[in-house]
Length: 279
Image (cartoon, rainbow, N blue to C red; front, top):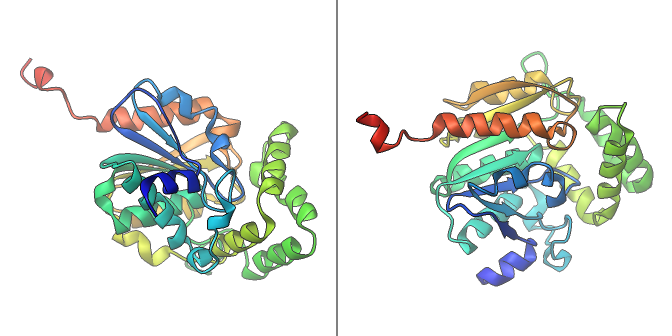
């Protein structure tokens, strides 16, 4: 597949005026539109790269291959393909939820593509493994959710969207997420859900070498504090920030705080200009 085909396949959009790339990777059941309150804030300084994972948004559904996307490594290859097509090196990747895990897997495979990772609401495993690990869900609960997808996709979407979004006082947010779920191809969504919620990538975290920031929301049902803390503990040299934002989608519910924390992290990691070193 040539570069142009990859950009069409993943509905890649590039904006901004900088030279360093800032790649935004969306979460399960979402698409690049979910970054619309955050991404523009970085266009002045960065080359902003938005895309849809195959099977999501306006990606080419004809490119969906169940064999490739049966686990998250297929989606990680989407990111690596995009980096190759755009000839990116030392990019900054901002990933939300499972997009954070996918970005992490991509960085383990090809660390030279990435300079920094920002992981928003990450979880290496959504299943509890007591007493040593709290992922937030019992396996039978996750299997029941997948069964609900098979039996009543619309009902599943209307049930899960408010659980993920939180912020019950702002129902328009969960309504948007529900619409996003329903705009996704059901078969692709079902397989993506299984690859997401029944996966366990805890053993991969120790292989990560790219410096990372973990943004953990308060009161997040999908990726609880223990899951975020585990990711932080396992990734050497990572930073952890607890957000005031609640729910699982701070880039939609609390975009200003999300922008601020990303900016603070990137500013703290920028090299000191030569002129200031000798001042």
